[in-house]
Image (tube, rainbow, N blue to C red):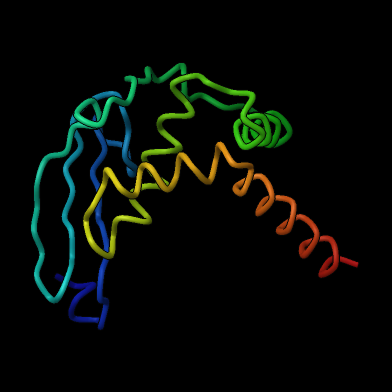
Length: 134
């Protein structure tokens, strides 16, 4: 409700399974969806979209270098672990905030990953970051 009062048009506020502050495939998630001035709260189970459940150890990262390597492998299409499904789910959530169509948003997120577009965006971000740092 606060996001709407501040002028927000569309947003998702999530309480991930197990108390996470992001969506997870480990189980059902609670979602409050602001759209057109109304907030609808519901429980959302990623298994309904065919996503594989991820255990905590599937999502555990490490130091910054390891995390960067994990992200790059995922964006290159070299990681088909449950971690990939969690990334797809959260990318889909960002895309679905406007219209709430999780299946279509999941398809778009999957296409961005599989086509290499997501990795290209990472490369573009790196280039801009290096230019700014120089």
